[in-house]
Image 1 (tube, rainbow, N blue to C red):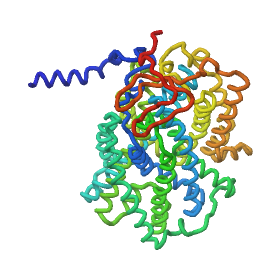
Image 2 (cartoon, rainbow, N blue to C red; image 1 turned 60 degrees about the vertical axis):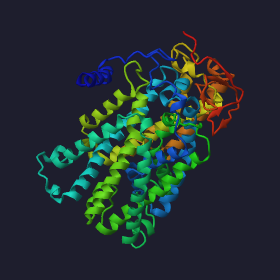
Image 3 (cartoon, helix red, strand yellow; image 1 turned 90 degrees about the horizontal axis):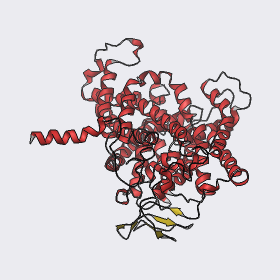
Image 4 (cartoon, one colour; image 1 turned 180 degrees about the vertical axis):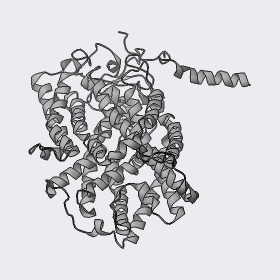
Length: 555
C-alpha cells in the first residue's frame, strides 16, 4: 500500500519537474503553439450556464478593487448623486465589449492567447499577451497584501491580544511582523485554490455569490443608518478637487476610471467565454456587469461616507475601515467575507487570466499550473507591501492601463466582427506558416491601428502619474482614453484592411469550428456559414454546417 501511494505521488509530481511538458498525442501536436490548456475546450467540459456567469461577475465585482475604483471617482469631488450614474454607464459601455469578446471564446472554445493569433499574427500575439498579463500580475500581488490585512482583522476579532503582537521588523520594512504572518497564512490558502482547475472552481464562485452579497448589503445598511441617510459624501454637493479639470472633464475621467477597472477583462473574456455550454446566448449576459457593478458600488460609496462621518477621514481601504468596528463579531464576519471576495477576485481576474495568457508564450514549457505557481511566488518575492507604498501613483498607473486596453479591444472587435465576419479556422490557429502567419508571423495592420490608438494618449497618461508635467491640452483626450483608443483603433484598422491592404489570406467563406455537442453526443468539427443558430437546450451550431475531420491536415 505505501509503495502504491509513493508511485502515485511520483506519477502526479513527476511531469511538473521536467522542463518540457509531457508529450501529448491529440489534435494539435505542435508544442510550439499547442498544449492541453490552449487547445479548444472539449464539448463535455463546456459546462457554464447563465447562473455560473452571473456568479462569476458577482465574484469579480464584489471585491476590494471595486471599492478603490469607486472611491477614486469620489476623490475627484463627486458625491453619490454623480458617482452612481458614472458607475452605471461606465460598466454599461464596458459590458458591450466584454460580451463581444466573450462570444469569440464561446464560439471557438479557445482562450485569449489563441484568439489574438488570428488578429495580430502567430508571433505578433506575444506582445499583446504580455501587455494583458502584466496588469494581472501586479493586481494579484497587491491584493495578496490586502487579503492578509483582512485575515488580520479576523484574527484580532477572535484574539484581541493579537493587536499587540510584537513587531520585530524595522519601521521602513513597509509591513509589521503580524502583517507578514497573516500575509503568508493567506498566501497558502490562495495558492492552493488557484492551483485547482478553473472548471472545478464554479462552486467557489457560487459560494461567494451566496455569502458576499449579504455582507455588502449589511455594510450598506450599517453605513446608511449610522449616517442617518448617507452622510456628506452622499447627500452633499459635488466640489471638484482638480486644479485643471472642470466638472465635465472630471466626469469623463471618472467614467474612464470605471471602464478601466474591467478594461483588461474586455480583451481576455474569451478565457471564460470558452466554458459556455450555450455560446453565451441570451441578452442577460449584457446586463450582468452594469446591474451587479452598480448595486455593489453602493456599499463602498456609503461606507466611505460613513467613515468620514464617524472618524473624520476619507478612507477607501477596507481593512482600515473594518479595524475601526467596535463589534468583534462584525470585524470577523466582515473580514472573512472580504477574504472570500478577494480570493474569488484574484482567481477570476488575476491568477487564471495571467496563467492562461502566459501559456501562449511557450506552450511546450508553460501550462496553467506552472504559470499559476509562478504568479503565486511572485506575490511574495516582489514584496508587494513596498509596491503599494506609493498607492496614489500606482493606482494612477494601473487605472491608466486602459489607454492600452481600449485600442487592443478595438482592434479585436473590428477584426473579428467587421473584417473576418466571425469566420475563423480553428485548426489554423495552431499552425506555423498558415493563414494567420501574415508577414513573418506578425499582422502589421493590427499593430498600426493599435499604436495609432494609444500614442496620442501617452502625454495624458504621463500627467496622470505626475501632475506637475506640462503637456498642453493633450490631457483632455486622456480623460476619455478608453473610448478614444477603442474608437480610433477600429476606424484605422477598418480603413487599412478595407482600402489599403486587405488581409485576403485570412478571410474565409466558411468558419471551421471545434467539435460541438449535437443531440447529446459529441460531434466532429463543423464548417459553418455566415448565419449561426444556437439551440440553448442542445448547445448546437446547426446553420449551413457539414462534418469535417476533427483532426487537421498535417503540415
